[in-house]
Length: 419
Image (cartoon, rainbow, N blue to C red; front, side):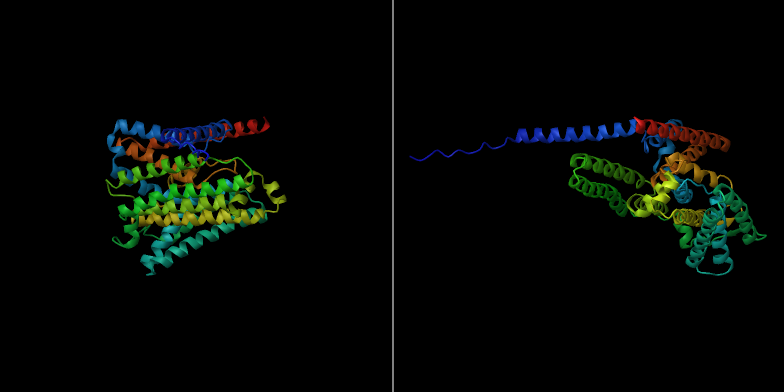
């Protein structure tokens, strides 16, 4: 007598969809729970500056709808790129608990060097740019030498450098006081006109989400292999999808106007490269360690002097590059380049974006967010035909709020660690 063959019941498609929904809900709860835990522990990340940016854009748009027009945002991104590159260097020195007050003068001197060598002396433009950046690197190395060998505080050495470099800028420019760069040259077109093609900009907008997903999956596997807690795949997919959709919407909107500026793309590329170096390399971990506790870093075997040198050299080099971009944007090099509020805006952008004045905490993306906030204030007030005095007052207030938030978050992290 043959036995009756029993088949396992086939899974119901309805149950499968229900399981998927449960997993998605669990992933969302995990993501939100991790975010709430970070906020409670004082790790606010970019949340305050994003909230502030939304408020600023809402206010200015309600007063003048032109503010959020595609072409106005394109101009805003052009303006962000010059000081934003300088602010990336400020992030480096702030991470190690130091400061560079001469970045504005350094940018002006670099633009004067490029104008003099290229226009007056007949050099090709590329060697002139390389010389300007190399001079910035040498000046940064001098600051580090004064700190490492003589113990001179960076506040004093860079303040002296501010005056000395300003004098060199005036000397290089001579009695004319300004040099006009060839209009229509590649350098000037780069600073004023060059746009990333629409298709290329959409492809580039896919890369951050893909990178976040791949890096997250790799990190998840390593943590699971070490039997540590790891984020779910669903949460990683949700985060990657959200960033990708957001960037694609932004790019599509900008392409309704002139498009994404190539100079801003270079700025973002530098920010991504620096973020990778600060978070994924031994040098970046050493930077944070020195800024957190110099003596502990020295006892751990980190070459503190070399880290300081790299921070100051990188800061001055990026300041010089920012000066080159400013010359391209304005199509001139003059005595006014690097003066005024360039110095303060570069430092304020890093701090407003979330880099701590106490050292040991910050990111390259803080410079991106911070300079967008500052330029948004400047653009909004310009559209409203209001006095520039208001821009200084509002920027100062935003900077003060950022420092207060940073101080309170630092106290919260200390108390949370004791608990």
